[in-house]
Length: 89
Image 1 (cartoon, helix red, strand yellow):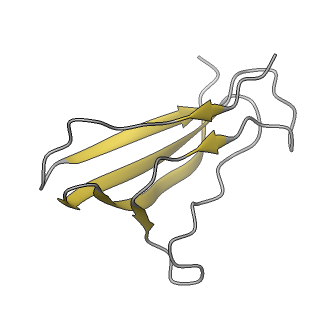
Image 2 (cartoon, rainbow, N blue to C red; image 1 turned 45 degrees about the horizontal axis):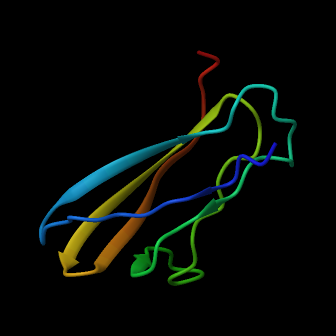
Image 3 (cartoon, rainbow, N blue to C red; image 1 turned 90 degrees about the horizontal axis):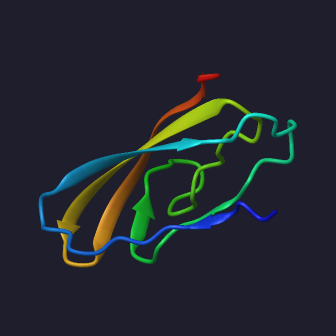
């Protein structure tokens, strides 16, 4: 079963901030995690690869936290806040 996800945002306001927690399901083997497709207009913070989405955890029971700021309409600053938080539920 395909569990890859495409994310979308609507109704955002300038100055708004929000955080997403993305969790790999239990039982996902290392290296075979599900993929996330991000919406358009994200400017990713990364000094080595500007505007490149971050690599997310790819093993079961791991949570990654991603934060966003909306500086103007249809524009998002994206930040990888934390990665690989173990949470077996």
